[in-house]
Length: 447
Image 1 (cartoon, rainbow, N blue to C red):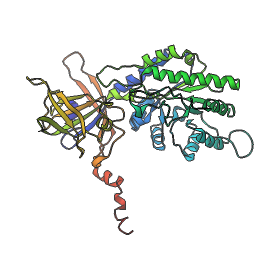
Image 2: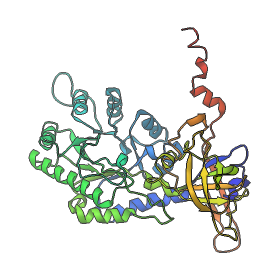
Image 3: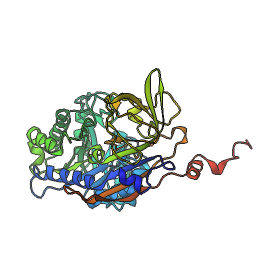
Image 4: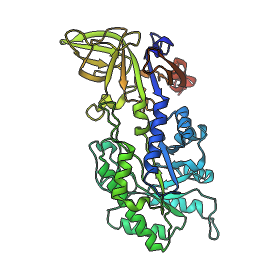
């Protein structure tokens, strides 16, 4: 925090900034690899693909690629970002509920993996991989699969539970006739070699996630028996490992999940199936911090309110669903030094954002050192989603994001040296005008 102030990343002219701990991201990637390496059979093909929606930032995707992590993409934009980051086609997986024919064709031509979402999409793939006349593929496709919804239930956040009875994703496996349709679909398509299931995200217990993986594995076994060979050679088990937002502790960990899968679905790791994962939030959340300036300190109805530059435009989910997305807040003075609690203890206060509506609050009645104008507040565990899903309320500019590394320091008195590298430049006012139709200023006047 001190280095961000000293090096001019935050101040009166740049009152909010995003910070990413590069060492933390690398450590999370290493922990993911180690956890699954412990349980998979030697020689098993494994692809860990980062869910790009969690941090759609090209330098982040490049850093993860350097650590052997691919990309799971769900839109043409996310695919373009993965390619801009230099991620190889064989390390990209396309999942989306509304892929166009053009998107499917591009994926096939590039050789990236595709998971079809529904029977209509599978029919589109039929037309793309088969020539108009004669058998055999028209294009050399990458791996093609089908997403199923095991319908094992939801977690505590309904909007993020993707394996409920009525989820919009995948083929609903328990619906009448659905399982038989899936088996038949694979029987008639020898080029369909993957099965995909993703149970949920934040708020979903590991046991529910493991139950969904088990359902997908059992279906794969049934399909392979029906066709009389190992047609399904890879299982894509999605991601969704929840994050602890209550403390610095990383729990649950990848090892917890991998060990639970080993106990619940031992056949998943015996070497017969390749494995794809699609973790997102758990790889980045703990490595990110939003640092914002307190512009004013006031009170209303006897409650202190700190007006900051970090609100719904960054912490959208926290502002609109605080029970599901609470964030820890820490206080610093204008030099980036942690503020001590006063002699009378912490002061219960609201931490508000800059958006022009009353509910723009990232913390309500939160005990903190008393905040004053010019102080700084840090929103912790914000490395995933908070930087890449900007809510353009009031045309507030997207903040600059910087990765950092620390060298030196440690147990002695010598201070560590903090180096920053730009991940995304602060959005300029000219850029806001441009993306808001500035070049078409008079277009409506002549109609």
